[in-house]
Length: 133
Image (cartoon, rainbow, N blue to C red; front, side, top):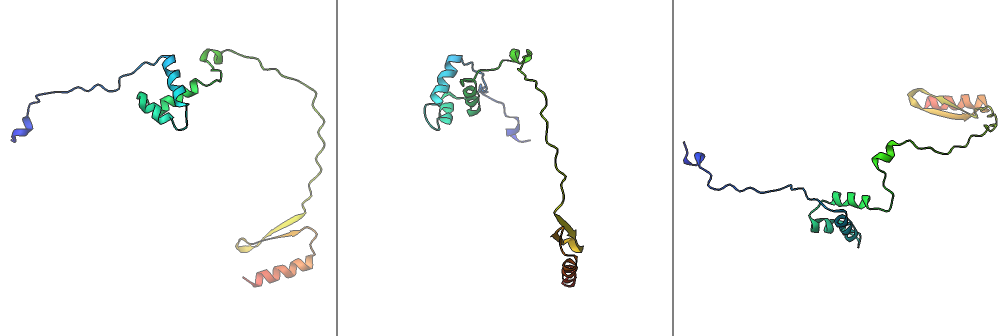
């Protein structure tokens, strides 16, 4: 056996990572205001305080001027004003009469003609189209 495979460790170093920090609302607000002071400051501000850009974006959303909706307020029923009125008379739709006819030929070819096309002219057209195949 090789001597290096059973080597004893002389020193063990423990590196602490992932320690969760607690930020007060005042600290978060200070960081958010700093990130909004100029263009493209989100990444720089996040790096300066050692937080992720997504965390800073979440804080920015939370500190907007929009009223926040709490979970408790979402569970409570609310009323919406409604106005009920008599239905209006809708005009009767006029019957739709097709003004065009689509003729599908072999090979996926199509001819679209007006409904009042001359039958003799259409027959001559179809003869010409069939000869060119």
